[in-house]
Length: 369
Image (cartoon, rainbow, N blue to C red; front, side):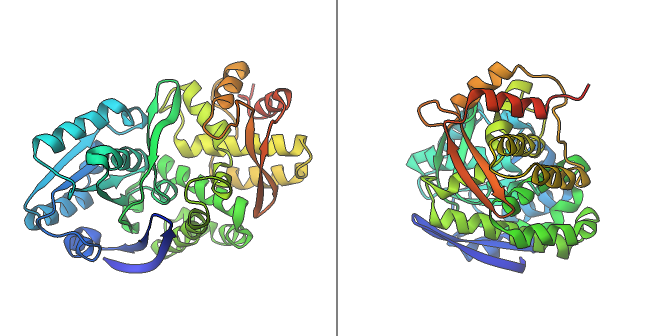
């Protein structure tokens, strides 16, 4: 793999490399060997049916099959509905039937759903085996870093999960050129989030390079990923288990996860839900005097310029949304807990937010009449 950018995450449970480059399908075996894999390593490849049909993946799989003596490859249906215990059980069965032991490596090749599911399987099979994140979407640059892996429960997103750090994160930027436009735009939401909570220079860079981003210039996208991943990596290093600062990465997610659950997984992409969730959080922050109304309007304008949604597509029940947010993983004693922006590059955790205020924020992103 031809590395364009590389950085190391120094997590307390172990360090790993994030490599952003291209040419991975032809060099996947040699690249994996750099991180401790061998041709005799029992290897499970998990992807989804969309990625499995791509020539890029077929070349990567062919390279692996020629060099790996024990390999299983299987795909899940694309979409959030596949992030389930039922799908996880299918992979446990495949691995166990093949005689895969604790030396197994799992390669997660796809977007955030694949990464979360495959990482969860890796964290729980044989009490934990090695895995490598190979993101193929822009959105997955956030979820592939930090070791948070999970599956969904019908009553809430990511309710069943673990912390399990990857051996490496390998990002081939050429995969971004094959993304459908909606998926590409959705991935920009997490980069916007990283800029808003922790990096004003990234915010300025986004404004200066919007044309290259829209054109999917590979050098610009590599730089975007590097800058955004650097924000996430720095926070993870300082707070691996989300005891304090890492919670800031949930900006827009408390609202966003509620929207995904209420509308049904798949109605909104995760990035779209986060985009609308950030607008709701900004409405809440302005209401609570955390920041000015003009800041909300500035961010909303940038999201709109990136073709990200700022309003819900259909109505939701505010009381149901509040109940979901009270039970959110970040909530404390079922008190409403939100990440609120104070200024560009600075955010804070707020516990015990009044229900009435949260309802007003929900009205700010309600479906336009």
